[in-house]
Length: 442
Ligand SMILES: *Cc1c(COP(=O)(O)O)cnc(C)c1O
Image 1 (cartoon, helix red, strand yellow):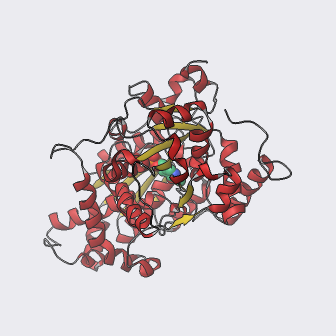
Image 2: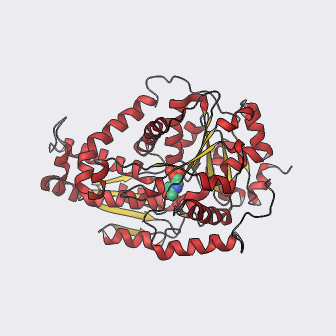
Image 3: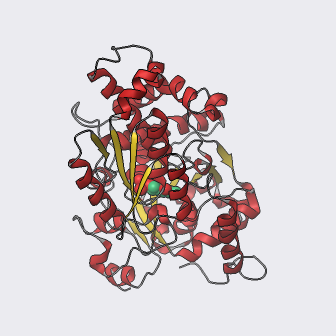
């Protein structure tokens, strides 16, 4: 067996298991805990009428930005027939309104928190006042003198740019070289200033951070280091819990819950994992999925130091633009040390195959990044490393009662011509019959 370094460099898909996984401790009051997740959730409830006012598409959900939890029986039957597959569900963040991706919860949360803060400090808003006043002409005039900036590979920019512009802020999005044209065009159409940078995500964030520092009235949302983003994302765990209850799904010693999350810088999957592990303890098993070209969280945790994937000879170039990140968040990675079960890697070809599969079987259209988690159950049940994990945690005999959640993180806003190309690549990748590849699982 080659060592981890060589496998990563050769872009061999692999499952890395986290030996530092531990039970969730009851944290000291100074540390982040479930209380902070609940506070963020309560805050989003207070913002709901304002969001409803700003985005008419939220009328049906009363201003709550949430996605459905969908059964996926046909996808499951295609990818893993047999009773040991348990039950597969899709957490459908690909359809999240307003921003069209998992970034909706975190990005919009941080913009709203900042807007409220600014309004309070300038005396426009009194404590416990109606937050609808943040949509008033005087609030708009105030926000118009301030800037909100962010560095992004695309989706975080879409989320933050759209809500910042709706509130009347000057919004600036620093895009990395992998950002898709349509995402930039969409933002510009809403009056957002889009600055295209040569480098990757890390470079775009650094440029944005630097520029914002020189503007007196600028607030930079730092995807490499943001507690607000993290907590906004974490609220998904509470909502998922309610949805699972509604379906009669519980998690316990005899019926484990597995969750597969596409990972970029780590904020979204990290926040969700943080919330779920605090809610379900040792009965939930969260795995991250990263492109073979960008396994930044994997190397950060496996080598236990702040590092970029370029240090092991990878180029961070992938069609999964939402996951094209070379260095994990130094805020999130240490928090994941004891909480995440493992990380597996995905070649781009598999992203397109699985994007096509979920369309053919469940009629769901997603973007490539959002397909990264789909091989999770196969990694766990059909590989040596996965079986080791199941045995170690006494799960091997409990698979029939297990629930697997595939988190589809983006796709709603993808233009149809763009989607058609993804579809075509998936169809070709799967071969003429559109059936399973012959290659045996590793
Ligand atoms: C950003 C993003 C992710 C991952 O979130 P991070 O906070 O960067 O880890 C996953 N999927 C999609 C579609 C994204 O845009």
